[in-house]
Image (cartoon, rainbow, N blue to C red; front, side, top):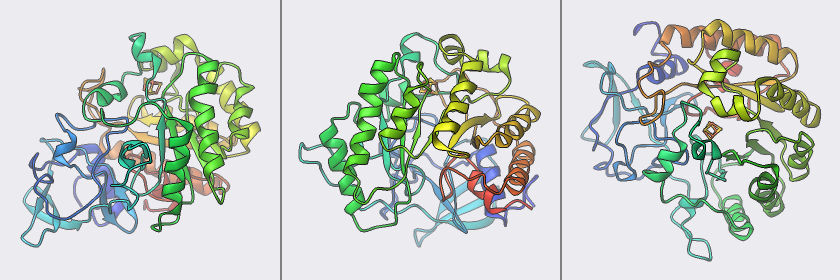
Length: 384
Ligand code: SF4
């Protein structure tokens, strides 16, 4: 046992690595000889001063299908070293724990679209292997000076992520979709699309829903498309997402406690509102079906009792529950906020697992382990 967790269980090891981060030499991966999939910086910069040339892996593979985000934190008891045979070894202080693997670079990277766009600048691979796009990476809450306090989208796109494409022609979207769908690699059970927040519904239609339709139209055969967006002002637009080919949707309120929500997500509160948010989520359940409309929470921004209550209420209404475990991103309003500790993260993980057992129809967005959430691990029953 290391602290609260049993490090022999990959899901519990992940909890600890997310709570504490891991320490390693900043240039360790820059000098690593073997090829692997390094971080694209699509929307978040989770470690201080990291840039693409540092080649931090997108995820670490802990075994048994479990992957985790790599958060570099110099104060962590966990540390990584590379041995003479180029294996990446995980230690707890000076005690060897296990080897960890690095993700494979998707074979559709390293190519160019017909207009010269590098594929890794337009295709965003979520987690280890789920392809998709971050369209409209320009949330207007930064322009009004009141972004969600944990969000590093703007600073990431100005620094480490500045080579990522920020405007998407339908032709490029279609070409990129055909490319990843036709490249022999792994099965693609789902395409993942995320967008920042547009100020008006007209912009949402033009810059978010239209490109999504281009993805769907280019798919052959058609495959499920999951979308994470801010809900539209006119709730009838939720139907437009479905018509564009979306099969599941997430409107993440992030924080269930009304007062903490106001503080942490000031623009979502001011320009949309807590009650309307849940009306939008409930409308999405009507449009997409039970457990195909999700409302995500960031674990660690409110008391764990509030998160548990939220998930109980939502899952009972057919709303999909999904988590994002808080990481303090440099340059954000919460850069110095402590991470949720292991014990609390484990309590929430076990509670989520219990809910998945009680509501077997409830599903996770992704059918694989993802970076900063234990949804899939809890659904699988990994927590003892
Ligand atoms: S809505 Fe909030 S979390 Fe989403 S991109 Fe804008 S500031 Fe970031």
